[in-house]
Length: 393
Image (tube, rainbow, N blue to C red; front, side, top):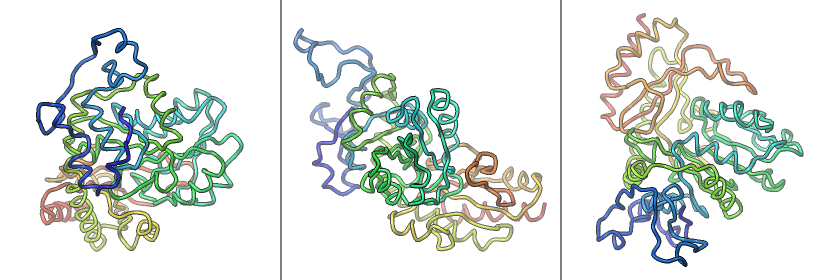
């Protein structure tokens, strides 16, 4: 588990992504850190074995493959340190378990990723932690939701289904004054376009499976913390025995090297296609924070420097058969649960089934689109044909 030495943070993000975490001089000149598969580390002397801070002591607690990724993510986030997890959900659970104890309360945005709700309702609640959901657009109004038992606030901005942008600086200012930990899921924008720790958050997590890996071939999660919380995060990580496989660390490191270039393309393409969809027959509303039509566009412009690859589309109300005709005939958009890879995805979604604090009452079928790296005109043609099938059904 590598700690940020602070030196790389002065460099630009593209330089960090290209160089940080790579140490060819330690690996016979090879550019990329090799895959270190192993459990046992042997020590040459008793003093080395009994050292209180060995660089590596056992495969579960880290190796050069994991350290390469931790170093890079810490520099990008401006974090005191980073730990890795076998999935984004395990990174979320790790962050929550780091800051919460039985008898505490956590406030979770009502727009959170559904697995976040599952770990909150199914694990935290069973352990004696009270979970309450709040309006993602509450901003400074979060103060009225806080009680003397509130120990953490979980933010996801924008939400990965309904794409509300949260006023993180306002929430963090109130939480910091009351010694309440703020955890932020930053998977959509990545640290290239959004900087939660600089805005007052304490821990930032990523479903690294998505943008960091970028190739749909590994499960991965990261959690990075400020000085206040990194020691506790690291300790909880070790005690829970969480670790990402060396092979997945290698794939994440590979993905990170091209993250800046991929994010530029994903951002430009998703924004272009979202704008184009606003004028298409059968489309009732496009929900993309980078569009001026989005209700939180001003917050997006204030806090973000770019957009992610994912947004949602509300269609004109029609029966399920029309939706099936639309999506079953897609040629370039696959249907799948994730996003962040090079290939475009389409997923029917149902926020009305999970929202509790603020009921989702928008009529009509809803799709989440991940815009990959295919030719934009080809993607538009695929969607145009799909919408024609939808309208004709």
